Image 1 (tube, rainbow, N blue to C red):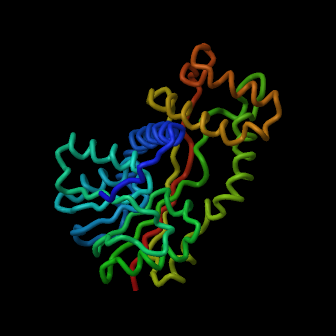
Image 2: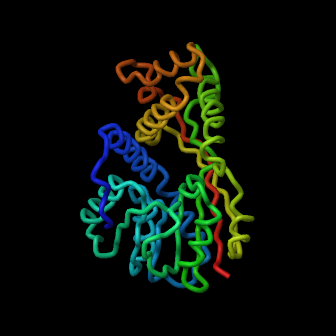
Length: 283
């Protein structure tokens, strides 16, 4: 692993820990969908080397290791905390010899040596790139001839509440997301993008596109309450200055874990979102 910058503020580390917990919940709840995405990819022979770009805490890394038992994965992320967490999981699972972690800024002009992977996996990471066209060209450069690039993106942030909830402020979640979308449009303009034309322009042939609907009833999965709580806490942090006071107060009531009306205690939660995957072959 590349060395980390020695100066991390307490706030940064705390935020990274919260984000890591959400990523772990995401991996747990969407595990079957991740397996379905990987199984759909047009791969004739197991890849020898896999590159996981923007790996987070390893949802894709471990799913790929399980699907391809002879493959090795290079996991790349900008967060040293996430990479440490991924490494600890790899050791716990006994697969540390098959995982290499590298800390890198993928928007940087120069990349570290990432090998020559047969498969590059980028799940919920490409929309974070400030220069996605450059990143796509670099992916093409590192891929082995005929290698596959899988881009997986969520269609916006997940929803959890019915549109009629909460009783005192119906439609609250949609209004929160609308406010967040306005902010994200400024800072992450490629969120929700169609990656097909950009992949083609970067020298790939798109061999397939698939969208999977996700709708998981919270009553059947206790982790969804915790996932909703973590996600909406982050959402509150982003939109607190733009919400009307009545909406902010209603949101705070949902986030108050001491209240019997808080998100983890609700029986009407469900995880609803969509994932789209583009499978692109290097020309």
